[in-house]
Amino acid sequence: MIIELANKVMAGGEITRQEALALAALPESETMLLLAMADKIRQHFVGDTVDLCAIVSGRSGRCPENCAFCAQSAYHKTDAPVYGLLPEEELLAAARQAKAQGAVRFSIVTSGRGVEREGDFERILTALHKMREECGLEVCASLGILTPDAARALKDAGVSRYHANVETSRSHFGKICTTHTYEDKLSTIEAARSAGLQICSGGILGLGETIEQRVEMAFELKAVGVTSVPLNILNPIPGTKLADNPPLAPLEILKSFALFRFVLPKAMIRTAGGREKNLRDLQSLALSGGLNGMLIGGYLTTGGRSEADDRQMIADLGRAMPGQEQVSW
Image 1 (spheres, one colour):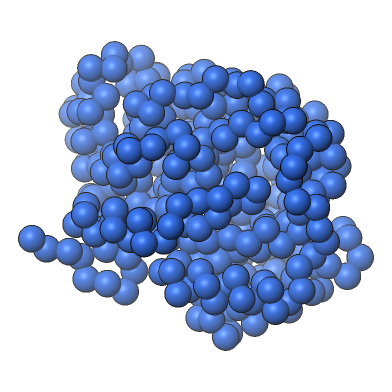
Image 2 (image 1 turned 180 degrees about the vertical axis):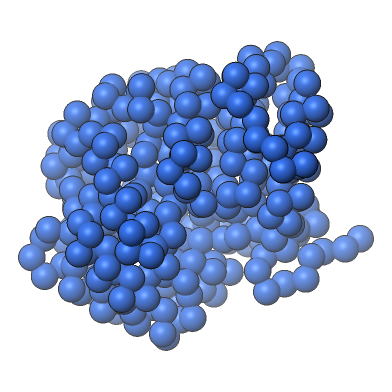
């Protein structure tokens, strides 16, 4: 079944939700074959380049939303840093560092419901424009819920992609957040798309959802035309509602990644926060199991691993970053 469905996708077909659920129900003994065929799909549609992006936490803490996983929520008592919008030079310095580490995209991420804090949005627009002009990076933004006017302003500033995670499936969302809705997420995605921005949207695995709900999320992302999909894995933070969530098994995570590739064969799918803690020595299997991108460096409230280790992993897999030739043996 795995090979048959992979061939169907590579021939230009689409798997149904029922077929994806059948793949999700496969025993662990079939996981490696599933990863291999997901990687065939990746090779067929998006090639061997590993896309690297990086972020800066431009404004941290005091968020009025109650997302159960988030260390920056005002509803939680955590050790996450709290600060207002970083000075422009600090934002630009972070972009320069990301460029030096091989990132082709860079995003400013801010805590909060949206861009409503007085003066912050205008300063963010200026910083994003300078990042694009001075660093030669593709610039993105992740600023929460977005109005159509704000989306157009981001486009005018040179932003090419807006990030707005749906976080989880529609059927599970109410257990993760109640201060905004799944429809609010979709409205932001539509506002960004209408302004001519590409859409980056994914979620977090390990929020207490079932693997069937991960399939649900994959098809929801497909339905709204998302082309860039970051897949995080919960790194439970003390003081948050999900602090005691049990970790997912590495092979379950990799199986879930592969399912996203079967459903979204042409998308940029990247592993993001939590990969170091949850995949450990199996991190390379994400890139040889269907994924074609990584978020590098640190995350919002947790650190990542060294840029040198990630570069070595990419080279050991015979893969290349944008602007490099593929490694040949």
